[in-house]
Length: 227
Image 1 (cartoon, rainbow, N blue to C red):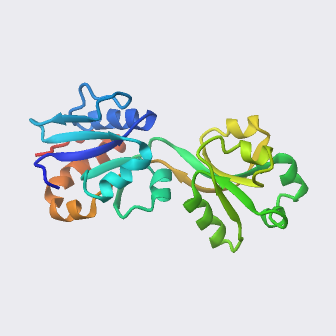
Image 2: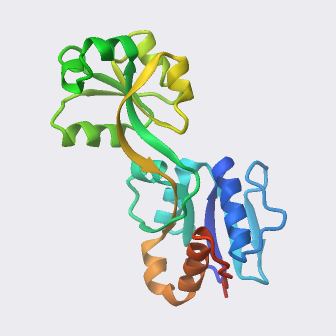
Image 3: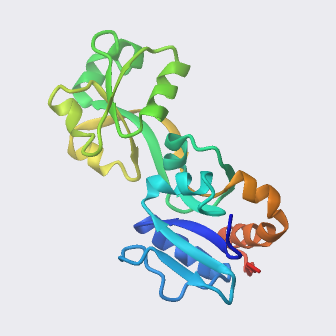
């Protein structure tokens, strides 16, 4: 990895804030760390650890290519990235779900049947084309995937798509746009991931860190040692 310090990639935003709380619980130094700041690297030489703050979608990339030994990222982001990393621990926070959703009226007219709904147009809008394509492919349902970067709920309201694949927590946004969940795909929580080379070469050093985070996630009092 080219450094004596253990490097962890953390996501910006709420998931990153929750990750910092978990790190503190596990005994990591976190004083002064913030995910919404211009400072993107926080180093603690005495403890042998540093953090790099990334966009959530970039965390798997930094870990895969060795810029970070470990990373904390949502399963939704990890699944869409398809990065070649080790998924080590389900950390339990940041819960949301991948769902397929449709306009309420169209769903009722289709008799609550996904196959019937897709007998006409087969366009699906999503920020997660890899996840969406895999879901429909596994069910033998050919669809046209339309990738968007935000406001997915708008697509069926203006005729751009017939269905959407998105992540939800409470489902409130779907209801506000008169969309209904057609089926769930899989749940998502924050995961601890590792660079494959670092995991093999530095396993003895990484193992106590991984165990400490695992214990903290499970409600224990594990204390991390990075050096």
